[in-house]
Length: 165
Image 1 (spheres, rainbow, N blue to C red):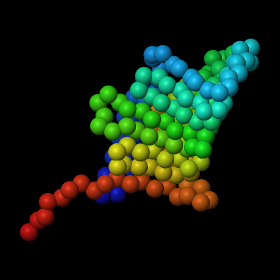
Image 2 (cartoon, one colour):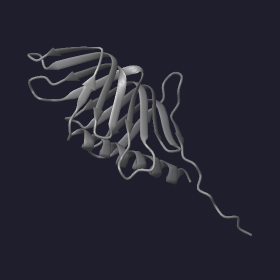
Image 3 (spheres, helix red, strand yellow):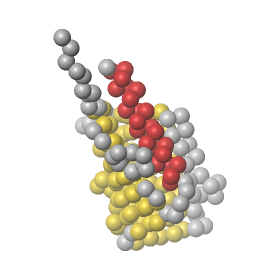
Image 4 (cartoon, one colour):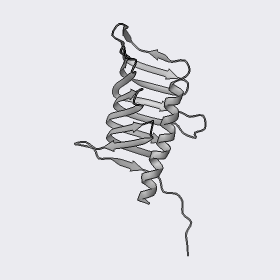
Protein backbone atom coordinates (compact mmCIF):
# COMPACT_ATOMS: atom_id res chain seq x y z
CA UNK A 1 0.00 0.00 0.00
CA UNK A 2 2.87 2.41 0.78
CA UNK A 3 4.25 1.82 -2.72
CA UNK A 4 0.85 2.68 -4.18
CA UNK A 5 0.70 5.92 -2.17
CA UNK A 6 4.27 6.82 -3.10
CA UNK A 7 3.52 6.46 -6.83
CA UNK A 8 -0.12 7.49 -7.14
CA UNK A 9 -0.17 11.00 -5.66
CA UNK A 10 2.92 12.31 -7.49
CA UNK A 11 1.56 10.86 -10.74
CA UNK A 12 -1.83 12.53 -10.27
CA UNK A 13 -0.36 15.85 -9.18
CA UNK A 14 2.34 15.70 -11.82
CA UNK A 15 -0.08 15.30 -14.68
CA UNK A 16 -2.24 18.06 -13.31
CA UNK A 17 0.53 20.57 -12.62
CA UNK A 18 2.14 19.84 -15.98
CA UNK A 19 -1.17 20.71 -17.60
CA UNK A 20 -1.34 23.88 -15.51
CA UNK A 21 2.01 25.15 -16.75
CA UNK A 22 1.33 24.10 -20.33
CA UNK A 23 -1.87 26.16 -20.28
CA UNK A 24 -0.04 29.06 -18.68
CA UNK A 25 2.22 29.31 -21.71
CA UNK A 26 -0.62 30.13 -24.10
CA UNK A 27 -3.63 32.41 -24.13
CA UNK A 28 -4.31 35.86 -22.75
CA UNK A 29 -2.87 36.66 -19.33
CA UNK A 30 -4.71 39.17 -17.13
CA UNK A 31 -3.35 40.64 -13.89
CA UNK A 32 -5.53 42.77 -11.61
CA UNK A 33 -4.06 44.46 -8.52
CA UNK A 34 -4.39 47.57 -6.38
CA UNK A 35 -0.88 48.70 -7.39
CA UNK A 36 1.58 47.90 -10.16
CA UNK A 37 5.15 48.87 -10.97
CA UNK A 38 7.10 48.08 -14.12
CA UNK A 39 10.87 48.51 -14.36
CA UNK A 40 11.49 47.54 -17.98
CA UNK A 41 15.27 48.34 -18.06
CA UNK A 42 15.88 45.99 -15.11
CA UNK A 43 13.36 43.40 -16.30
CA UNK A 44 10.90 43.15 -13.46
CA UNK A 45 7.38 44.08 -12.49
CA UNK A 46 5.66 44.05 -9.09
CA UNK A 47 1.93 43.95 -8.41
CA UNK A 48 0.55 44.34 -4.89
CA UNK A 49 -2.75 44.44 -3.06
CA UNK A 50 -5.44 41.87 -3.89
CA UNK A 51 -3.48 40.46 -6.81
CA UNK A 52 -5.40 38.21 -9.20
CA UNK A 53 -3.73 36.56 -12.19
CA UNK A 54 -6.00 34.75 -14.61
CA UNK A 55 -5.22 32.77 -17.74
CA UNK A 56 -7.62 30.31 -19.34
CA UNK A 57 -8.51 27.84 -16.54
CA UNK A 58 -5.88 29.08 -14.06
CA UNK A 59 -6.55 31.50 -11.21
CA UNK A 60 -3.72 32.72 -8.97
CA UNK A 61 -4.40 35.06 -6.06
CA UNK A 62 -2.25 36.63 -3.38
CA UNK A 63 -0.92 39.81 -1.84
CA UNK A 64 2.16 40.43 -4.01
CA UNK A 65 3.30 39.15 -7.42
CA UNK A 66 6.86 39.73 -8.64
CA UNK A 67 7.76 38.83 -12.22
CA UNK A 68 11.44 38.93 -13.14
CA UNK A 69 12.83 38.69 -16.63
CA UNK A 70 16.38 40.06 -16.65
CA UNK A 71 18.37 40.61 -19.85
CA UNK A 72 19.19 36.92 -20.22
CA UNK A 73 15.48 36.21 -20.64
CA UNK A 74 15.10 33.77 -17.72
CA UNK A 75 11.55 34.19 -16.41
CA UNK A 76 10.71 33.80 -12.73
CA UNK A 77 7.40 34.64 -11.05
CA UNK A 78 6.68 34.67 -7.31
CA UNK A 79 3.28 35.10 -5.67
CA UNK A 80 3.18 35.74 -1.92
CA UNK A 81 0.12 35.77 0.28
CA UNK A 82 -1.56 34.65 3.46
CA UNK A 83 -1.85 32.29 1.67
CA UNK A 84 -1.16 32.59 -2.04
CA UNK A 85 -3.62 30.34 -3.87
CA UNK A 86 -3.52 28.65 -7.26
CA UNK A 87 -6.69 27.03 -8.64
CA UNK A 88 -6.61 25.05 -11.87
CA UNK A 89 -9.52 23.17 -13.38
CA UNK A 90 -8.37 20.98 -16.27
CA UNK A 91 -11.05 20.42 -18.91
CA UNK A 92 -11.09 16.65 -18.33
CA UNK A 93 -10.96 16.76 -14.50
CA UNK A 94 -13.87 16.14 -12.17
CA UNK A 95 -12.44 18.47 -9.52
CA UNK A 96 -10.06 21.44 -9.46
CA UNK A 97 -6.48 21.34 -8.25
CA UNK A 98 -5.92 23.83 -5.43
CA UNK A 99 -2.43 24.74 -4.22
CA UNK A 100 -1.78 27.09 -1.31
CA UNK A 101 1.39 28.39 0.35
CA UNK A 102 2.80 31.62 1.73
CA UNK A 103 5.04 31.77 -1.36
CA UNK A 104 4.84 30.14 -4.82
CA UNK A 105 7.72 30.56 -7.27
CA UNK A 106 7.90 29.31 -10.84
CA UNK A 107 11.20 29.35 -12.75
CA UNK A 108 10.59 28.92 -16.49
CA UNK A 109 14.17 27.92 -17.32
CA UNK A 110 14.42 25.07 -14.80
CA UNK A 111 10.66 24.42 -15.00
CA UNK A 112 10.63 24.25 -11.22
CA UNK A 113 7.56 25.17 -9.14
CA UNK A 114 8.34 25.78 -5.46
CA UNK A 115 5.70 26.16 -2.76
CA UNK A 116 7.00 27.36 0.62
CA UNK A 117 5.42 27.97 4.00
CA UNK A 118 2.41 25.83 4.80
CA UNK A 119 2.49 24.31 1.31
CA UNK A 120 -0.55 22.22 0.36
CA UNK A 121 -1.80 20.68 -2.88
CA UNK A 122 -5.31 19.21 -3.12
CA UNK A 123 -7.03 17.32 -5.90
CA UNK A 124 -10.39 16.00 -4.85
CA UNK A 125 -9.72 14.05 -1.66
CA UNK A 126 -5.98 13.57 -2.40
CA UNK A 127 -3.72 15.98 -0.51
CA UNK A 128 -0.03 16.62 -0.05
CA UNK A 129 1.12 19.06 2.61
CA UNK A 130 4.56 20.07 3.89
CA UNK A 131 6.55 23.13 4.78
CA UNK A 132 8.07 23.08 1.29
CA UNK A 133 7.08 21.30 -1.93
CA UNK A 134 9.31 21.39 -5.03
CA UNK A 135 7.98 20.10 -8.31
CA UNK A 136 10.17 19.79 -11.38
CA UNK A 137 7.85 19.80 -14.35
CA UNK A 138 10.54 18.68 -16.81
CA UNK A 139 11.12 15.31 -15.18
CA UNK A 140 7.84 15.21 -13.18
CA UNK A 141 9.58 14.74 -9.84
CA UNK A 142 8.19 16.09 -6.63
CA UNK A 143 10.02 16.59 -3.36
CA UNK A 144 8.38 17.59 -0.08
CA UNK A 145 10.18 18.62 3.10
CA UNK A 146 8.90 19.20 6.59
CA UNK A 147 9.97 22.13 8.71
CA UNK A 148 10.19 22.94 12.39
CA UNK A 149 6.43 22.75 12.90
CA UNK A 150 5.17 20.64 10.00
CA UNK A 151 5.97 17.19 8.69
CA UNK A 152 5.24 15.86 5.19
CA UNK A 153 1.74 14.42 4.96
CA UNK A 154 0.06 12.61 2.05
CA UNK A 155 -3.61 11.65 2.22
CA UNK A 156 -5.12 9.31 -0.37
CA UNK A 157 -8.58 7.87 0.26
CA UNK A 158 -8.60 4.09 0.34
CA UNK A 159 -10.55 2.44 -2.46
CA UNK A 160 -13.67 0.50 -1.59
CA UNK A 161 -12.76 -3.14 -1.19
CA UNK A 162 -15.51 -5.74 -1.30
CA UNK A 163 -15.84 -7.98 1.75
CA UNK A 164 -14.23 -11.38 1.25
CA UNK A 165 -15.41 -14.56 3.00
